[in-house]
Amino acid sequence: MLDIPVNEAVTLADLTRDPYPIYRQMRAETPVVRVAQTNRIFVTRFEHTKWIKENPEIFSSDDPMTPMKPAFQAHTLMRKDGDEHRAERMAMQPAFSPKVIRTDWAELYTKLAEDYVSRLPKGETVDLFADLCGPIAARILAHMLGLEEATDEQMQRWSQRLIDGAGNFGNDPELFALSDAANAEMNALFEQVMPRHIAAPNNSAFSVMLNAKMPIPVSQMYANIKIAIGGGINEPRDALATILYGLLTNPEQLEEVKRQEAWLDAFEEGVRWVAPIQVSGRRTTQEVQIGDHVIGPNETVMTIQASANRDEAIYADGEAFNVFRDKHPHQAFGSGPHHCAGAQVARRTLGQIMLPLLFERFPNMALTDPKEVIWSGFGFRGPLNLPVTLA
Amino acid sequence: MTKITFVQPDGRSQTVSARAGDSVMQTALAHSIDGIFAECGGAMMCATCHCYIEDARTGEASQGEEDLLDCAEDEVRPSSRLSCQIKVSEDLDGLVVHLPVTVD
Ligand code: FES
Image (cartoon, rainbow over all chains, first blue to last red):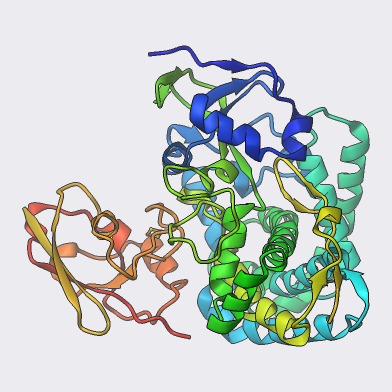
């Protein structure tokens, strides 16, 4: 058994700029390594990250120190295990089930997508990230949660404040003040719409939770909705921007995708290539061996799905965007009890509706210059802009 | 050795040897059976391991399994099960598992 190697060199700034060369080297040389700057153990190989997520008794999601608690003003299901997690998740899950997606969200999303896409000015250059990816993600989520009253701007701002708060490991009071203000606005809206959802039950997450046979406490409903706001905008936004970038920088693949209508494959490849959520933390509940190393209890292990999704052991040429690669399940949606609750919604709304619609309307759209696109992020990753000429 | 037969909606069938202790879902993955995705890896959270089994030997679905079956992608029938919730044992020799049709 070997001591865990320590990496003193890698900084958060490096990882935020471009983590992929760093992960490639880690997979090859130090697949289990303590990154000194974060004091966390990074696990970068596919077989390990999957195994860790599927063994929650050893690798708990419960982290008493997480800044998520002050940011969300609640202990949320993301940071719970076992029955408690299941009860809270299943309270909301029916709103995101394939059945409800078919009956409610697919039609609505098609209408919304047409609406948002038709507002884009043909012939001009726009930033699709800011003008489409973010707002459409906010709008569909507002409907799915039962918060139609919220504006796109509010939804996006709340989401960002929650995320910034949840990542506030330095305990900056400024960031918590901002997330507190967002919480107050959200709570006020929840109170305002609650009677409507009780009076007229519907398939939105809030209504489903309120009208359940055995409802969870209202405070947990609030926490659940906030988790969905924090987690349900960035991911589809970044996924859409990433897939568009991949297709627009690989025109032969785009042509072939159009020909075969392989939009769902394009979706899967985009989220494999650059997973919108790149890392997830788990806490060891006991001494455990990962690869050649033994890790003590109460260590924070970062499972890097971004890296697993490019693991040479699974993917040939995993660094490249290739819609037509040999299929293999990826880990962008995680695995185990916390497998992404929004995976099916994302596949259908982006893969089946938005992508074909957008390319039908603008078959010749093009990036002004791929080099202008700025990629960023360690925990969450995607392009920060997507300047496209619409044609 | 426990034999399990997987039957595709088009009638194609494949009989494989299952290891005792594995779940039916793990058996399917180990033999690359089409139609079982098991995205959550058996945590009973994704319902992408949905199948139809008419065989009393597999017992009843738990309440949690029933609840998640309501969220399955394909048509849910009385015989619907989550294959990750069924453990293979010698007793299940000859089990027949039908894979669901994708509704769209
Ligand atoms: S594998 Fe996910 S529910 Fe069975």
